Amino acid sequence: MSTNLVDEGFAFLFPGQGSQSVGMLSKLAEVHTEVASTFQAASEVLGYDLWDLVRNGPEERLNLTQCTQPAMLAADVAAWRVWSKRTSVRPGWMAGHSLGEYAALVCSGALIFEDAVRLVAERGRLMQEAVPPETGAMAAILGLNDTQVVEVCSRASTETEIVKPANFNAPGQIVIAGHKVAVERAVELGKAEGAKRAVLLPVSVPSHCPLMRSAAEKFREMLSGIAVKIPPIGVLHNVDVASHSAPDVIRAVLEKQLYSPVRWTDSILFMSQQGVSRFVECGPGRVLTGLNKRIVPACRTEAVFDPDSLIRALELVQ
Image 1: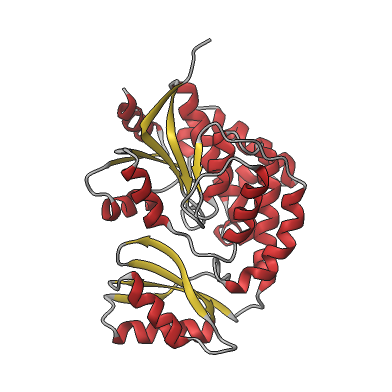
Image 2 (image 1 turned 90 degrees about the vertical axis):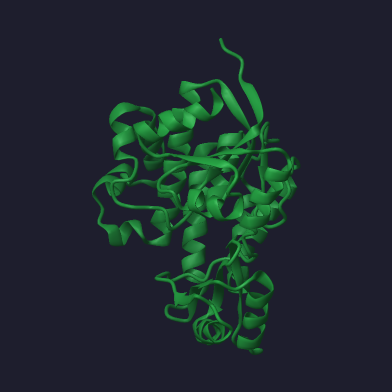
């Protein structure tokens, strides 16, 4: 039996909601059985055929938060399982963007996959229920720095209508979230400040902002009943750009993540400062690969979502 080899200059990144698409990982599944078996395990937890939904749609259902979250978790984990069967090299670090953090925790060994499926399905349901329809929104602001976006959000907020930075995705690429009317004000203020683009996003749930506190409080109870192990691979968490080993602390940061901004730029920079120069985006799409080009252009990033991309990613550790 081969011994796993840890490469400290190498990190795995797991995409979250927004990277899903009907047919994702279909080419990888044609060659590697781990994809279908991972989705089968998730389907047994959920009580419906998740792989059928991913392969055939409808897209509207796949894009429902409570369906998207387990679908993306399963896709990320499936890609990791394919990788893991092909090489004994393991990354020194893992990180996941928002929902992707759950995949990182599964693949690092901190969470059991089936438990994570239950968690994210409930997470999605609670997030959807937390804010009445049409009252929350998110928007992307491109071309302003972090300080400018924080100031725009402050000016656009009132005592009863708030907007906050939700995702610090890359320099000059920030997502905001909150009450729809406040987000709309922030979009206009952002344009006035000189943003290259400031646009509402087609989402119904204002993630990673204080409007999710009620969801987080309900989610805490479910988290308390889930087994968490010390992860053998360090997982960098969104809320504090730190890795944790204590199960209670991991549960606490997962709860806080629901209503706190995703510090993605800081996370990638931190790993780079620790000597990471190669990244693999593990799961559908190339969203995180694109962000890395803006954050750490000197580093190499490959994605794993089909047989050809798997070969390119494996070359990073050969």
